[in-house]
Image (cartoon, rainbow, N blue to C red):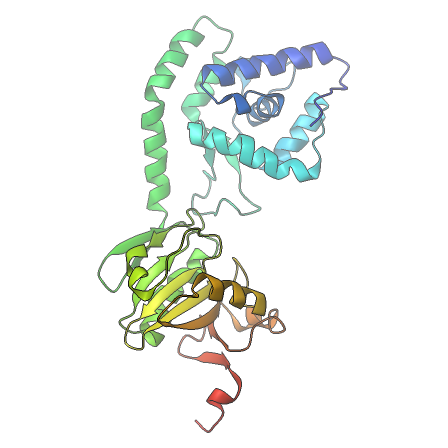
Length: 323
């Protein structure tokens, strides 16, 4: 990625970028985040142009696109639209992990993959940044670094409080990240499973924030299934013990419907299963299903959360007959 700057005051621009890099080094960021991209991102988050003193740094809420716009307007560095994910994954994510950047402080329940996601410099860190190039910097940095683990734990607890609690039939509770497909997954576990796999054993639940949200791998082994990589797993796996079925459920909003291609992928993952495989696509609303009608595989099932007591069978003659 080119790092050429076209601003008339390019010397001042480069000086300000070097200052931001020095701060990132002092904070202990990895070398991969001690670059121009990360420095410019930090400056945007602090609303600092070339001439703004560090003491005037602020912490407005900013999304990735406004960050890129600020950099272009104030530092004459234009990042291509396809670098948006690079900034998010290789700079912003590390700032969040370091504890000085808070995602969605205005609405912690907002999923981080939402287009409305915003970020804000944490208040204690803001005070630290404002002290840069003063006699107080070294002492404030030392105190900040000593307290950062406490800050990270505090914000982690606040995010944890926003998670979606789901109680399993065993009485055990699991907690899913808010938003995304997890709202539908909650309905699958509470409604679909209680109605159509009563007494079933929950084996696996994917999570927006943590792909292995819940995984009872030991319960798969007696069924002849060993999963090495999670990339092909469905969103929910339930062992309906009474009929010895493995029910594989996709919550549409993540992978999409169980298409013929997806069905084949799942059959490969669970090829050695001694339990029969049942494929289910779950939607929140019937209108959601309408968009996928041409893609849904035969010999699968469709469940709609807004009409939880019914299932639509894409199974041909097996279910032909009067009700």
